[in-house]
View 1 (cartoon, rainbow, N blue to C red):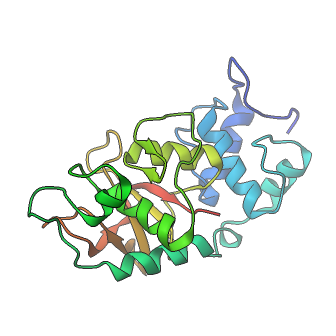
View 2 (view 1 turned 90 degrees about the vertical axis):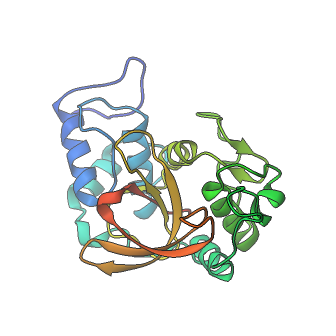
Length: 235
């Protein structure tokens, strides 16, 4: 690589950016669309790669990061679950079967805790599990996309995905580990739903614990990699 790559305005672009995006995608770090533009999604993927390879997490591809990318192999990445994710998962499992009360009301103990009740609550449930189970607040201080951000977490799935991409926690559509956050997309538009991965089952399938599922409850589900935008792993 002949030049260092980083976020600029206007964005850096060219074949070297395409090469980096393609390498990141192959390693399981989704840079967004492979379009040859070094934008926020690509920088977020670089930060995730840097985190996993114990490099400075600045989203800047200098000599050290460039060399690490050249040497990296897919099998070397994403093999350690997040401690916070594991604790959030344990909290989520405790609440399997908890239902809306009254039925079809979106009113839950999680919404009451969150301070916003009677609304779609899948992201509120994940926020609860990370805040209560792992002592971690999703999207805290996130200024990039403020919709749905509250003191105890986030209520809006597109914001949570954008935040994970920005902080370098986005993995893309790769076989997940327990405790990873799954971001679902049913129709190809903005993401629709969120859950916490329980385990990868093989053959493109995984189990997850999710709130606001069919029947308005916390439920263990079996999902497919084809149903997700990707996964995030909270450090």
